Amino acid sequence: MSHLRDGDQRVWYVSRAMPSDRCKNCESRTRLLWPPGRKPDLLALETGSWIDLRQCQACGALWSGSPYEPYASFEYLVLWPADRGAWVQAHAVDDGQLLLRWHGWMIHQHWRALSGDDLAAVEQHRRRAPGNNPVDAPPRFDEREVLNPS
Ligand SMILES: [Zn+2]
Image (cartoon, rainbow, N blue to C red; front, side, top):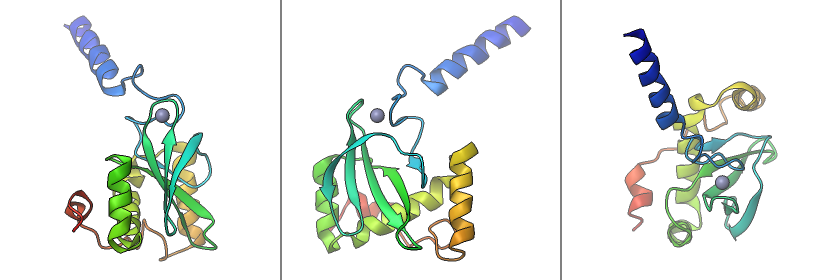
């Protein structure tokens, strides 16, 4: 019985961790967020107002980057869930304000999934900008706004 359970756990681990699918560069599929500091190697695609779009050349994943206060020195990357055209369209709605709210909201929603040095980088940002960071003061955002920009 314990052997069966071990086998099940191994299957579960492989299917959940998807080691063969995980991009070695940007870690897409197992990661939604890059905190200030460590960054994957990405190609710039689009530049907006305080927010941009980049692409991983290893797997094609799209990442949206934006710097946060103080001094725009704490940059986060959030995995963009749609294609390049959708990002351009969403940015055009209100010169990037919608995308910036989405970006901060995503950080607020997913920062707890980070660990180790990544989590420490977020904690450092929170200490540096208390009450003025996306974790503690997230923007108001509804997911449907980006899925259906009007
Ligand atoms: Zn990648």
